Amino acid sequence: MKTLFLIFALQVAFLAGAGERKPACCVTNRETASAVNSPAFTDKSLYQLDSVWNSADGGKLKLAELKGKPQVVTMFFARCELACPVLVHDVKRIEAALPSELRGKVGFVLVSFDSERDTPEVLRSYRERQELNAATWTLLQGKPDDVLELGALLGIKFKKDAQGQFAHSNVITVLDPAGEIVYQLNGLNLDVAPAISAIQKTVN
Amino acid sequence: MIGLALTTVAGQGTGLAELAPPPGMALVPSGRYEPLFRGEKDPKEVAVEAFLLDVAPVTNAEYLEFVKANPKWRRSEVKRLFADENYLKSWADDLDFGAANRSNAPVVHVSWFAAKAYCAWKGKRLPTTAEWEYAAAASPSRADGGKDTQFKQQILAWYAQPSVSNLPPVASNAANFFGVHDLHGLVWEWVADFNTAMVTGDARGDTGLERKLFCGSGSEGTNDRENYPAYMRYAFRSSLKAAYTVHNLGFRGAKDL
Image (cartoon, rainbow over the protein chains, first blue to last red):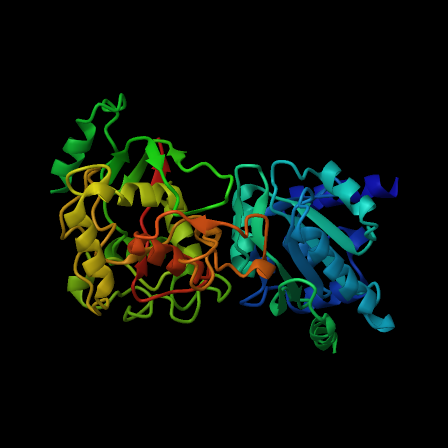
């Protein structure tokens, strides 16, 4: 029921073309305050993008709805057998390494390269399989052009091969609450401490 | 000159000859393109559907119309997310590209986002890497310029020269077999999927790719070690970021048929 409400609220927000307004369910007091104080996006905010994404919850969202808390953004695809499991594990290591006062206050976003196959259902079962907390993890499917655009903004290169697999760079990006890139981890199996301190700086 | 080029293209037996391309665009017939870099299991060639391509890069005068109609793309208005601080740097002001003789020169210092927005405004899109490379493989006399030694040498000669600060007008040089000008010899050009060029550093020898940074066909290797200009274009594209603006990087529009 709660899920249904969430979907409904997101759709209403989407249909209403809500840029800054957010569904009541997803807004913390802190977010409301910051949205009121700074209605416009900062110059380098990724939240200026107009693209609309399908989430694993079955709803649609604009990236601007992620505003208000730090977000750790990673591009992946569910069928990836090589780097992605390690990449997602790295993001989980970031989550596990968060100091207690930041638990639950940082969002994790996985955006799929595979617009065709990573439907919300596939993403939902991926989220379950990987035991990702639905409250803090957002998994997104987008249109190919929008995926290309987000990849371009994050400096991520990717290419589909004949087998439908994606070659891609492995990058974990920390966005501050306004949606600007503050830190990027390039590669696999790296020390996550710099990412943690980057996240801490955005909220202090 | 452009009119002549269009006639040549329309006269080809593509089966689409009766569809005259819109003014300023050439019909590039379907064909095959051999990617310079590909995965081990990827096919050697990819099919390119027939498409329309601007016969010349977008000029300063054309771009001025765009920023007049779209204030958010003016130099003083543009968001840093979409274009770096050198956006339209060579222009004198928001609505002034400087000396009048620059009107027909290609617009440069434009980001990928700006190029994309311009194309969308025109009802067009950026060409893909495959489309661009396929069109650019044509020499003035044949579609498959790779077999034209003189053509290859001319391109190499251009790539060996530093770019000039005062860019000449577009379409100053002869059109290629498809009726398209300036794919070589004037400026680099944005493509829609510039961030699919999986080249990092010197990948000419072995794959040279930073394997740790990539998943899947990190084994992607080059198939034509002789083709330095194509390699340079891939390397250049792979060094770009979407908000970058560069003094010798412009763009042109494409369109589906």
